[in-house]
Length: 156
Image 1 (cartoon, one colour):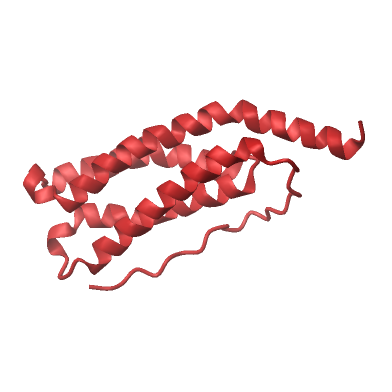
Image 2 (tube, rainbow, N blue to C red; image 1 turned 135 degrees about the vertical axis):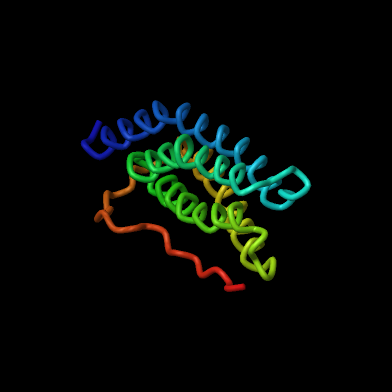
């Protein structure tokens, strides 16, 4: 076995070892996201108050945000890292939408934030699913800078 093929095999083994935790992270986040999205869209019908909205955001920040960042900065697969970081970034506008939904003059900000979040959840699920099936180990190229671009969100 050559050095490259041995490193590729070790990489695949490492990704497979992390796969269960990555799947649990995206599963838990998807359950949270489904509730969170419905809450932001139908908040007034669900008895949303500023305190309850802040509680939803706090739940994200205390439980889900650290787990997304663990994927973003610790997973060996570059696509998983990119998608996890992008989702973490896109949760800020979605969180603002949850807290300040009643103050918004239009739905464009909220809709853009939720659409971006929904797209990122799906992209991260796909990246996590495909990670164990990559044949070759990607060359390390991370320089510590943000991987994901920051989305422009429409102003109200």
